[in-house]
Amino acid sequence: MSTSAETTTLPTSTREIQLASRPHGRPRPENFRLAETKLPELQDGQVLVRNLYISVDPYMRGRMNDAKSYSAPFALDAALDGGAVGEVIASRSADRKVGDAVVHQLGWREYAVVDAEATTPARTDLAPAPAFLGALGMTGLTAYAGLLKVAGFKPGDAVFVSGAAGAVGSLVGQIAKAKGASRVIGSAGSPEKVARLLELGFDAAFNYHDGPVREQLREAAAGKGIDVYFDNVGGEHLEAALSELNVGGRVALCGAISQYNATVAPAAPRNLALAIGKQLTLRGFLVGGQRQHAAEFAAQMSAWLADGTVRYDETIVDGLENAPQAFIDLLDGANTGKMLVRI
Image 1 (cartoon, helix red, strand yellow):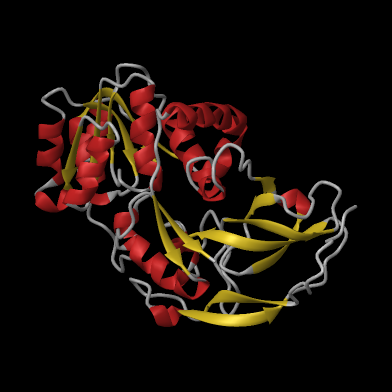
Image 2: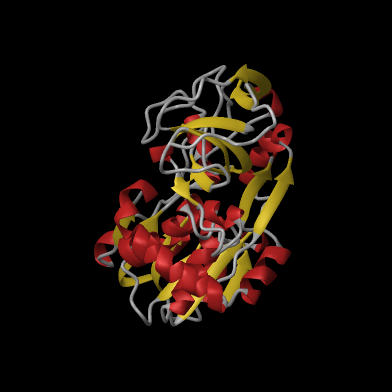
């Protein structure tokens, strides 16, 4: 086992973001609290990590509710958690040494004591550390497995991606192009994001604020419909996609950000019966159920990033104290690509 050789004193406490109250509708800054807590003693098989970047993600909104879901609710008056990448500064594990860059799930704090087996090496020889929370991390796996394994993408398919300028959506579109899509369409929430999607190789993109999604999607599909819909938004977007999907079309249900802050049940989609006559497949998925594809994904994505086939964007906010606002801004669509907080 190794121990830190640093001459500086290791931290005994950490600043962290706690959930002070459960949001009703859109989260507010007062739902969060910046606190300082004592770090536990490092035990055999554990490492002390100095977090460099933490991830804020839409799914975290659901965990702020005290409701049964696929992931346990965040506890009140306790630190939130989520993806983080950092540097090992002390180790009592033979598998991790001081200086290693690792990914783990104790984000929303400056320092974390983590079981070494719960960390994954970040191959910073392949890409910068933050990429392992995005394109080379769970975000990338979500896009890759959701499109290719869940939606069953085939070369020649026409693909529509909602929330396409976000971390997952922007990768989905580029993967579809790399795999031989006949047409890739994306929706986003600003002219700047639409322009970025076209730069990334999307064949068409539209601003959903400019008019009914169904009409804009029909025009973008050039009268040929779509074969695959990757859903990050739900609501009106899903309803529009159901109308434009061709017979035998497939939908990967990844997220529904349009309703995460809703306080009443959504009305859409009102045309779900179309799935019968069109013989559609709608399949929800969680990235945790796709880990069997992780090695395949990592090899392929590393190659795509190396040769420029796939590019990724990051929106970086500095300071742990600004993590709550970064999360709120994420839900409001303020990010292009992956939203990260640099500690």
